[in-house]
Length: 293
Image (cartoon, rainbow, N blue to C red; front, side, top):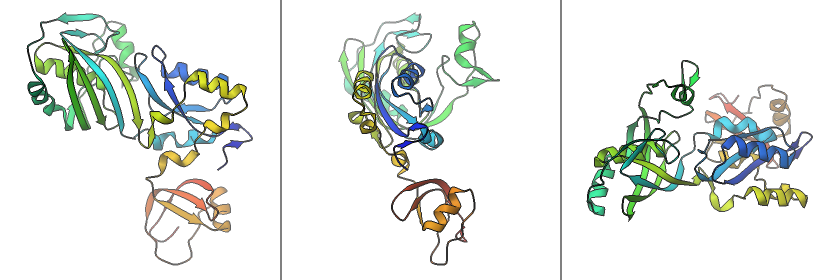
């Protein structure tokens, strides 16, 4: 699939989100800069957070559902001794407590409970829906939404004491993990409470922050007519999915929504599957049955 179609720009754009911006703010800004109205993201960042935001432009928006489940990596800091309504520095203080004396050995002992598959309760101020309403809307109206714990996986969790009452963290985790919840729960485990005071996202699946651009760089590229140079191919985020290669007839059939029967050979069922033509052009996402259809 080419990077530009009749509808505008197509592809994946990596943005280094600045602090104080919502993910929606970034998408709106990108729409104005690129002139492409069809832009979606593969997972939000809180306004306080910075770092990698993966945007899908044009035809690539059709792949958003396949990109939202990627693992992620973050660095950040946890401030101990104060709990907040939002579990981060932007919330109102709920309680303050003295921070116990500890060394990194004691800290690591407490962290062990948060490594691997865990049950994690999302923050009350989150975008999760309860009976059709966002949890943060309920919380802002004075209600206390009850959010069920969810199973997530923390693949890696390293931490160091960065100063009095401050812990620096490096987290690799599955999609759906809330780093705010980790901060809150670590504070509870230490007996003093805590909240997330800074967060930066470095990786989303195969994409890294090193390949991201600032909004200022995006504006400069638009002024220079070089937006294409910043776009990654539409299928870059789904490289772990199996692939099927079709000849010209098969590509034409699939492109028109018609099932294609592969002629003989060894067939392995796969769903989903990336579909390519023999010249390497990306056709789309589909499935392959055990009979080769």
